[in-house]
Amino acid sequence: MKFTCTKENFLQGIQAVSSITGKQVHLPILNNILLLAEPTGLKAVGTNLELSIVATIRGKVEQEGTFTVPAKTLVEYISLLPTEARIDCELEGTELVLKSGRQRTKMKGAPATDFPAVPTVEKISDLTFPADRLKRALQRVLMSVSHSEVRPELQGVLLFSEPNDQLRAIFASTDSYRLSEVKVELHNQVDLPVRVIIPQRTAQELHRLLPTTNDSVVLIFGEGQISCAIGDVHLVSRLIDGTYPDYRQIIPKTWNTEVKAPVEETLKAIKAASLFATQGVSAVSLELKPTEETLNITSASSQAGEHSADVAIEGTGADNKVILNHRFLADGLVAIDDERVVFKVVNSESPCMLQPEKTDDYLYIIMPIRQ
Image 1 (cartoon, helix red, strand yellow):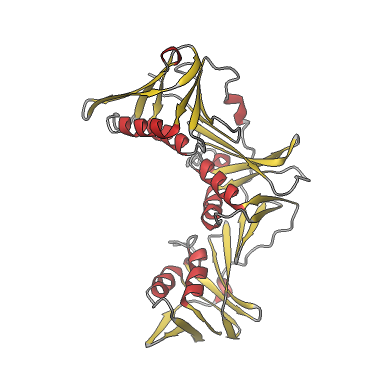
Image 2: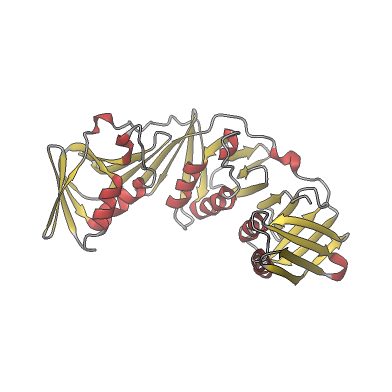
């Protein structure tokens, strides 16, 4: 194996794939990046068995071959080279020799024979999204994914299409304490219904790799698999096998109080209140007073003291009071892409809902803390 490329191109490729490599005690080869020097060009591959990422690297292949090297060492070394550096790589026995300027490095690795093959996905259906909208959608639902292993299906993001809406797809997640749902416009019309659970790590990597442009990105679905090509990077992952619960059953049909509040001011008030919330409980109290056009936010702890702030609101319905986790509430407000948030409450024991004022593309449910 022998190839030449620039530091910029090489680093970009290996960084794209190295994020899913880690401390694999039982299968050390997964700590490595696979380098493929092929007639069509140079590729880097990383995998954790559940998820594989392949990056095409621009460079010149002089001799074909394959080899694996430790991901962490390779990324850290290449990042230290001068910005405009040219790198010449050649395999010598069980070492990858890297030459750049006055530097010559021998990096020990392992043959590619034990490195897992990247699976191929036979397409059953696909969805085409604007890249920036898909990136934002994943950001808005990832925060609600469950970390508990008790219910594996909740450890991912639900993605589905509805028969009566062929122009949008829906992402949802819940950890039983809160729930996020995002509707995203499509660049293609839904031909076959889609209902899959994308693993949290896969959704995180998709979010990391997606650009902030409105270029089209296609998610391809096969039997238990998902794949996506983003520029020079190709991602393939298993899907979570299971049935996602009908989360819409927990959303109340009617509300006793509905108010509109400025997002930025409310978020600052919540953050200020969080400084005086009891550690471990993380509770802030919200008193909604539509008749007085005021939202009162308070917190208190025996260690830090107490805090109270009023936010001007518009609203209808009865006065209401609810106690919420300040971190969950702040996360929901950050996800609101509007100047004002619509806050809906039934009572102190029922789920509360946050929505943007002007669009129906997002809803966020929080379970209250019961006294």
